[in-house]
Image 1: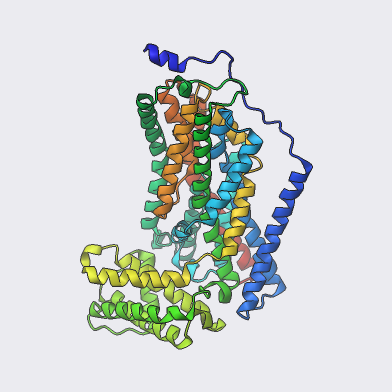
Image 2 (image 1 turned 90 degrees about the vertical axis):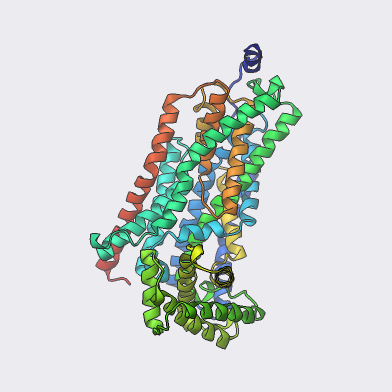
Amino acid sequence: MATLAMEQAPSAELPRSPRFDHQTHPLAKLLFAAIVVGGLAFAGWSVLTDTRGVGEELALGAFAFLGVALVIALGFEFVNGFHDTANAVATVIYTNSMPAHLAVVWSGFFNFLGVMVSSGAVAYSIITLLPVDLILNVGSASGFAMIFSLLLAAVLWNLGTWYVGLPNSSSHTLIGSVLGVGLANQLISAGSRGGTAGVDWSQAQKVLTGLWMAPLLGFGAALLLMFVLRMVARNPMLYRTPEADAPPPKGIRALLIFTCTAVSFSHGSNDGQKGMGLIMLILIGCAPTAYALNRTLPASSTPAFVQTANSATAAFDARSGGMIVTPVEARATLTQALQQRKAEGPKVFASLETLSKNLTERVASYGSLSAVPAEATSNVRNDMYLVLDTTKLVTKKAEAFQPAELKTFKDYQKSLEAGTRFIPLWVKIVVALALGLGTMIGWKRIVITVGEKIGKQHMTYSMGATAELVAAGTILAADIGGLPVSTTHILSSGVAGASVASGAGLQARTVRNLALAWLLTLPAAMALSGALYWSMLTAVRIFGLH
């Protein structure tokens, strides 16, 4: 007990809140504005270059519409940046490891790097939550209404929670917006009889599991890690509150800067992908010839695609029971299978066989995806999407197949993904800029909440390092698995767990508000996006748009 008392004893000089009154140099503001304008100009130039490269000329109206959609999507990532900055920088600021103005720039840079090295797996795990008919017809009025409503809902809810200084999950918000659109689309198009087939609830369950577990994981892991740290690290300095304006010892400071860097990088690698996926939907809808297929794949990859496709087609044929269906029937069958999340029986395999064979013949005749003519692009992409996602649904029951069959299907899936699920480099760059620049403004509200209003005691060095190590490790693991997770939930609950393990206690009001935000975000985002989607579709009908 004596040791514990010594570890928690306050320093001679009471800590105080960090300084947030640093004045930004006019040249820094000018550079910030120049990067914003340059990033938007780069995005516009890239779209023009890509579309003209495949002979797709966008009308001025279509280009303006695309520009507005891209600005909103990048705006979501920008808001995500300044909303989630506190997850990385609060600990280094409140332990005097870095001054606030330097910490946010540091965090922004490593958020940028995280986006640039991300795989894209998380981007498409979000998209698979959307209704099949909207993904297949993303260029329709319903498709654009879907994109605008879910983006606006996510931005509005994020701005609202930021304004009141509440750490809220951007992942939670976006997923709620996606589910709201899916549910509204089903109710509008099929009524209550259709149930909720417009939403992929199996994928939603997988994604939501990560979200509801995040606070529990963050709290429990930080609590445990803090206890372990107490047993192995006896340096009393780790458990003391920082002296006013005094930086920590070099080793502790290096640890805290490392954890800040790790959280920033992992946040960029996971959260940045959400904007990428939505931007790809926008590009596919507005400029399908340039973006519906990965035209950067070389012609030398076509023979390998044909070979894997033929092997998979033979495996489908073996399970089709000799049934023969037309391509039109095959598309209807696979679309229904994806909507109902049930892909089994001879008819499904016969449909996969027919569509795969038809798809393979077309790709082989063109020689490469880059040679697919404009008028055929959407059909090829949609057929690849149907076959890919149905095959993934089929192989969820791995025990029903021989190892050789599973390998054949997995190889085929990789070939289809290479042709449809890609992120152009320029999209990564502009999303990385939006997220990185977003971290540098508007961060003060959430930083104060995380740094001062969760635990009753001023944050110690060990509390800050523990919470951020848990957050960084969890997010990087989720990124590898292609799962979107909440940086905010993990970090905030990690701070709470470290506070409890330190005997500091929690501020009941803040914990209550965090819990309310965690519980209300999903239904609130669903209701907001669903209402926006219905309103936009109503406007489309009134004004005769299509």
